[in-house]
Image (tube, rainbow, N blue to C red; front, side):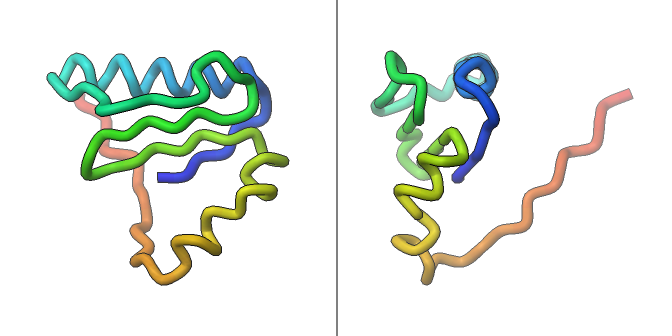
Length: 82
């Protein structure tokens, strides 16, 4: 999963949300990188790798080119529970 955010604050907030939600589900990362940086964060959840970038660093690393032959999955917000 590759995400783009607009600020270091959003970078940390998105990482924290993903980390906390998966932790509640009993899923722990195998590894995390960039937690003390303000440009990108990578979280390895074995079957899913999460990349969170500030826009300029996403463009610089261009992971879409690296993974260009991988199937794309259209993401949708799950329905909210009533």
